Amino acid sequence: MNSNSNASADPRIEHQQATVRDIPDQERDQLIVSATMIDDAWVVVSRYCDDTWQLTGGPTNSTEGQKQLNFTQAPRPFRGAMKEMMYRYLRSGLDGGVKPNSSTLRRTFTYSLPFLRYLEKLGIRDFGKVTPIVCLNYVAASKKVQQSKKKGEPALKSRTLENRFRAVELLYETSQYSSMPFRAHPWPESSAKHLAGQTGASRRDKTPLMPDDVFTALFQSSWKIVQSGDRLLTLRDDVDKELLELTIKCPRAISKRRAKMLANRGWDQGFRNFTIALTELSTACYIVIASLSGCRNHELAYLKFGAYYSREDDSGEVYWWMQSQSDKTGARMTEWMVPEAAVVALRIMDRWSAPLRVKLSEQIRELRTENPLDPRLAELLRHSDAVFLTSRKGGTKVASGRQISTKSAASWNFILKSFAKNNHIDWDLATHHFRRKFANYAARSRFGDLRYLREHFKHWSQDVTNDSYAFNENHEIELYAEIQSELDDLKFGTVERWLEPSTLLAGGYGRNIVNFRRRDEGIALFKDHGSMVRSVAESHAIRSNGHAWCTADDQRCIGNSFEKSRCGGCDNAVIDGTHASFYQHSYDELLALSRCDDIGSGGQARVRRDLARCREVLTLIGYEPKENSA
Image (tube, rainbow, N blue to C red):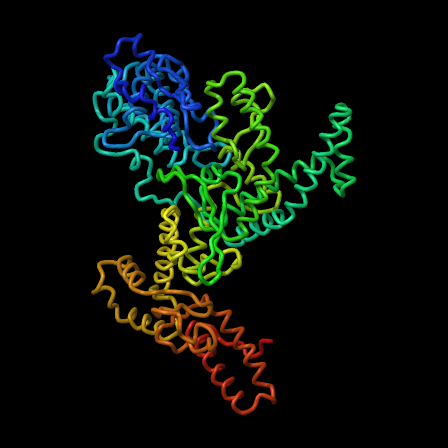
């Protein structure tokens, strides 16, 4: 379901005008802003006259507050115009664009408020009096308050500034259909992106790449917890069953008996720590699934009970698939190939979420009994059967107690940071870090540079365009594009290092590169250094086999497996300083082997040959072989 699919599907809304400027007030106030469907009946959620518009749909990892437009937050002179503009944007989008989803509309409204308050301070109460000078002064004022008193860092990051300035651009465009239009573009010769210093920025500028040691520690800590999950949940279920029987007999004794029941079953850390352990279990499952799938937070939030299945190919290889929903590209139901370790975590979450899913079902039945057309019912139904659930105060009020709903993205970021801290992992962990790390890891797997958690990524060490993947029309193509982008970055970085004049290289192809650099042929062939790097990277197959970079078109060379020392003279090999430890270690072993008197003359000859190969490689890349090494 798209974020605003409920509202846009209501035929009453579809027949409403998108511009309200010339509609009589009484008729305008009755316009439907949002509606939802319950049991094939449309129910109005918000009308134009409401001070707060409650939007429908949107990803389930957003809270009710994140889908509200509270117009009382805007300065009074602009409230009427803001309603006209937000309604226009909701119904038609920008010229030539698509209609915004609820989160985009809410974000635009929120980032508009600082500008409105700035105008109010200047005494401006009409958008018609806003000039480009006023807008550029707002840009300067926004940048002036960047210095943070706490850390000396920008209080408003460039991305936040860009969002603020984009909101001003949107106000200008939508105001042309309101009773209070801007007279001129806020910055005719510039753009929000440029003014915020975001020109040329990419996704990788915003998403830090988690270091290998951090990711390894994080995954290992999580996997250890997941492996003990069934035991912990069995303990919980046994205690809950006994408590239910005790409640019937003596309700007041429950709180006193819970810790004792746990202790009788081997848990001596108290009920509070048991609750913490259950929370950590769900966090560990999230980390394992996010790490092994590359899913975004909202895609994991959509996961429901039993969201996995397997397929077996002709050779008996089993491939696991995870099913969920993606709002990012409008793909809706989407599937991801995952290793079996992710399925283990998914099964744990099926069990973990069972009590909350039961409570949510009870709340849904309760609301149906009270009012079968209560708009709150539609929201609860969207979370039905989800596995990453939570119990919280506020939100949709229900008589039976705390609301059950999917964990929000903000909650997950807080939980993940706490998990990392509790496990002594020095990283400011956030939900979006997993997708970038997954793409990088999968790219390194295809690059041949697979160093950690190999068994959990066996399918990604193959070409993900194989039949099992390519023939699944529901898989997420965008993730593969991100993997390819990471692969390109890895290749470009490797080639850029090769072409640096100070980089020492061995291997047949490595020596050719050194000669190429000495002749300065790149100056004549390419317009600049970047073009040369890109051309070399794109025109060569480059893989790491652990002891060299192989540029051969296939992987059938014996140097990739049995006779590794052969790469030193291979015309397809490039060896640099990153391989020094391998050749020094090989040199040490061969030196020890040369002192053996039981390997025969043929063995001695081969050892001498390989010693010479290792010595030559080490010398060429700037290392002196250590003859006295152990």
